[in-house]
Length: 228
Image (cartoon, rainbow, N blue to C red; front, side, top):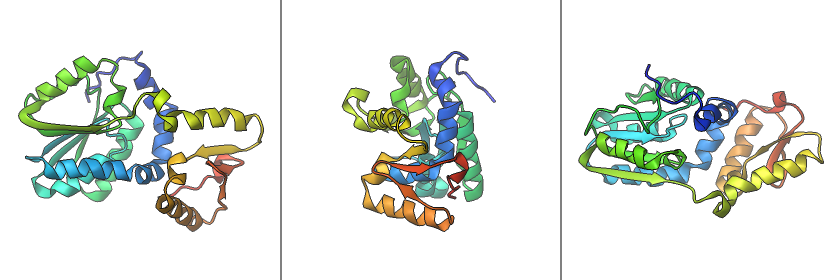
């Protein structure tokens, strides 16, 4: 396996450490929470031409697999991410589905893609992590065919995006006041359907659900159920 990410790269360390493991552990909740964004990307995939698709920063594979299901036998979908734990989860999910989608653990900024090989490049919150965007998009341009489409979704800056900062501030204040662990799921609280889904799946595990105003609380990590 080719791995081009530099050993001292901050994002590589982050997503191969606690952040990557946390994303894998809560992937079902996060995929449900981000489903509306995935749907927007799938509309673009459906409207595109050709079946060779590249998913940048694919994480645990939700968008790559959704595209593979949408394109069917005519599709050839590849997801790329720098996170070992997330790519492992994506491959496991693909194996369970029996899909032809493939996953690469590599840095999309410098990975030697086959030139002019993709009809569509998509990303759900992936390209915004490029530390060298000019170099990265130049690399993707080489991998794209002349009439290929590029569709991505990215957050605005942290200062303009409370989703990325509110939970961090709240964790600090609550940690100083309470003796429990908290799992912050602000996106769940903003959507009644997703909240109902969380309650239903949590109840099915047989464990008690303690929901605060912006978090799910539990005393020990073992109290958090595995929701599959």
